[in-house]
Structures are given as structure tokens and as C-alpha cells.
Length: 478
Image (cartoon, rainbow, N blue to C red; front, side, top):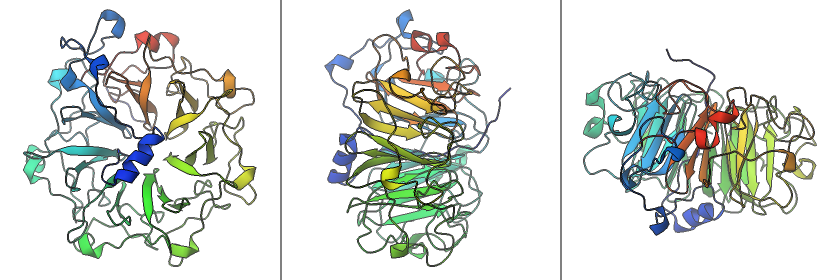
């Protein structure tokens, strides 16, 4: 039996294309994809479901991951051999396997038993992006393919039909997203039922659900669900004069862009102040709210942003000095400020008045990620710290206690996540109520809520008790 919980936020995908963009994001540690060197060589005798490193499990080179992208109740990984594998809930076709069968919730469904997603003969996947019930791939050459749920046009195919529920809808039969005549993408993000693509001219196009104005087009009309709404008919987002983007980030229903001039602009849902504009008014859902009328997010004097992470209703910025600032919803302490007060929904809460998250003495963040109600930071000493909601163990701290919602829980008092003897994360991604890391050897570990989304061949949650973390947390068999 599979369980359901919550609504997932999307995550930023690996960025390719602009040399400057890729180098910039890799420099902050958020999107780095490290080449496998001699130190990563391992015997190719494989890992079965439920295997742990202390049982002598090693991962074949071909089964190592470059990236992992958790959605609401499913997870996908891009492997070093270019294959894409997805597991978890499959009812909307989001696994791309031609059926609605979940994978990863029973033995015998992972590893060699888990088929790769077919995106067409000769296609090379450069990056993945996860929405709530769909997934997208950025292909070599800047083309985009999406599969899974499509009720709001999130697949960008001009209809409301899902893809991935039958074999005939994948592979060569899965159309590419029409971004316009001669238009390709250099970066791709997904969240909720919405996607955005960053284009070579550093403009932005978004499609799918638009209930809060997250497409940034001055209305609440979805795009991609009807003929004539994509391609040259899909307008670019107006980010104003000097509004060229270098990166885009997405939550469940809000979007932020990092601009070439160093500013951040956010639009879409804002009921909890997640846009950081000092009010709770949505932006982008009515005319006259975008372009130069959309204010920059004030993060304080002299604070330069390296990257962002957007959760369901909160946002965080990784600053170039390695510090982190978060705003928006804070019901479970996901802002990491020792209370449950919202930030960004009233005047006087942003800018220099917004405190930095205390990561510990001398600690700097190199990457951040945000789930529905939790946040994680990969630190410069190789440790991983997570705070916010832990009801399902998504913080990986061996209990169900929230962190960051009361004084004295952050800083040096906040433990690092135990990933196992000698293990260190090089990439971290948060799903709705689960968290995944890529380890230095290319292995994937996931913990938190489990209806199969952890890929461990069962539905036992991980991270709520000490024995389910560290060496007791299995590697995902790919």
C-alpha cells in the first residue's frame, strides 16, 4: 500500500549552456557535477535493494549518478552513462515507463529491474527538472521533453493529455516542447505544475499552471494546455530594463530570477511573504505588476546573491559570502531563525533587518535546497545541515523533532546529517517531504517520507530513528 502526503515543490536542475552561468553556479556548489576520477573507481559487483556500505556494497560505474531530482512523490536520477531512471509514485506517468505502476516500494523493482526512461534514439540528457507530478529533461542542443501529469499544460504540448502512462507516448513519440522558432533552452526548472526555461538571449519563458501568476504574464491563464499557447505565441517574462537573467529558481507556485546585474526578482504566489516584498500580495497575476514595476528583493546592503532555493512557501538565498538568508512561511522553523514568525510579508522584515541563518561557528554554505517545510545547506567543511520540519525524518537527524523553530536549535547546536562512515555529500536536493544527496562516489542516498520515493524497495520511512541513518541508510540501487 502506498501513502500520500502533501504537495511538492520543484527544484532547480543542472545548468548547461552559458559557460559563465555554468561556472558561476558550480562555483557556489549548487549545481556542480564532478567528473569521476581515479579515486571513484570501484568494483562492478553491484548493489541490491537495501544494501549498505558496511555490507561491502559497491556501485558499478554505469549506475553512478550525476544528479538526482526529487519531486512530490517520485524521484529521478541522471546516471553517468546518460540514462534516466525514475522511481516512486507513477499514477500520472511521471516515471515515464509506460504505465501507472509505482516503483521502489517493493523488492525487485530497483537496480537492473528498473527500466530507463526512453526519450528517443540517440537523445542525450543534459539536465532534469522535477515538478509535483511531472518531470522534464533538457536535451543536448537545448531541446526540452516533459512527461507525466498535464492537467494545466505543464508538459507544454498544447493539450491536457498526460504522457508516460502508455509505452506509445514516450521515446520518439514524445514531442519536444515548442519554445519558438529557432529557440532553445540553456537551463530548465520545474515546480508544482509549472516550468520555466532560460533561453540563450537570457530571457525567460514559463508554461503550465498559472493560478498565482507564476508564469509572470500578468494574468492567471495557464499556457501549454491549448493549441496556440506555446512557441512564438508564448511571451517571454518581462523582467524590466536590465532584466537579463543568469539563473531561474522555482517553488511550488512562485519563481525567482537572478539577474545579470546581481538583483533578484520574484513573482507568483505570495500568501506567506515568499516573494520577499514586504506584503502578501501575489505578483504576475494582473497587468502592470511585472517589468520595472516588480521590485527587486532587498537582502541588505552589499549582499550579493550566488544562488536561491525555493520551497513550497518559503525562499532562501545563498549569498556570495557563504551566508544564507530565508524568508516566507516559517511554521516549522524552515527559515532557521529560532522562531515560527513569517518574514517578508510585512514592511521592515527584509533587507538588513532579515537575519542570517546561523550555520555554526565559522561555517559557510556552498549549496542550499528547500522542500515543502524544510531547508538544507551543504557546508564548506563537507557537512550537511538541515532544519525545519522533521515529522517524516526529512532532516535526517534520527528523530521527528523540528529544528529552527525555537531558540538554541541552530548554529553549533544543529547536528550535521550522518551519511555514513567516510561519506560526504557533493550535491543535495530536497523533495516535498524527503531529501536526497549525491555522495562523492556517485552513490545516491535518500531519506524522509517513503511511499517508494526513497527507492529502497519498501515503504519504511528513513531518518526518524538513529539506526536508519549513517551506515544504516541504504544506497539507492540504480
